[in-house]
Amino acid sequence: DADVTQTPRNRITKTGKRIMLECSQTKGHDRMYWYRQDPGLGLRLIYYSFDVKDINKGEISDGYSVSRQAQAKFSLSLESAIPNQTALYFCATSDWGRLGDTQYFGPGTRLTVL
Amino acid sequence: AQSVTQPDIHITVSEGASLELRCNYSYGATPYLFWYVQSPGQGLQLLLKYFSGDTLVQGIKGFEAEFKRSQSSFNLRKPSVHWSDAAEYFCAVGSLLSGNTGKLIFGQGTTLQVKP
Image (cartoon, rainbow over all chains, first blue to last red; front, top):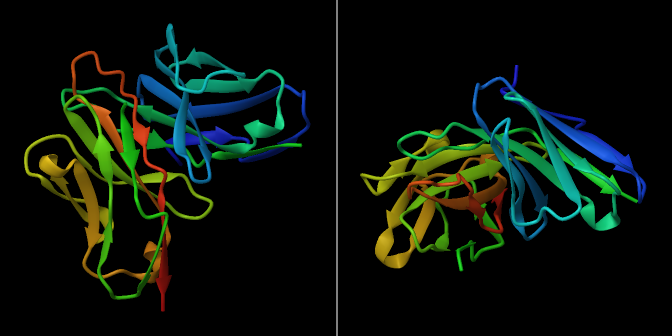
């Protein structure tokens, strides 16, 4: 089984709808991240969480919210989806250590907002 | 401002030829550096990472990268490319400073096409 799973893998929705993307991990990591990927822009950080009680905004958090339900689960919500939120969304986890941390990514969720 | 630049958006090489993908960074703190690969329809897989020590880093799938502080570069190389290496490659940089947030800055990506 994959260490980092994301559901759904693909989603098509309409403008104004509320959408939740879910991420689960079995790596036992404390840190979890949500990114979006757009062609030509690489990955940009939306939110990150160091533990259940520690959630922080990334560089592009407007229009998004998150919930860390447990160490293993981190959900991303679009309260009212808009077309420019069409993108590939990745969840990642990491475990901070003396030598820094390495992020491990899920397979991604392709979201299309019509 | 912190940034990562991958100057080549798209590269095409013949199978068996050597490969070098460029990555330049601008970062005020002591950096740590990564290369990830994304195959079509897949997530990002870690190829290699540099935190400290030997500036030539070996990774999976026969890849290596060299950290050159004086040039602010972390170029990825492979001596002989295989058709299965066709993918998108991302360079990323983070910081080893205490209180590090773990945040990574990613480059725009380089798409590698391999000709038979």
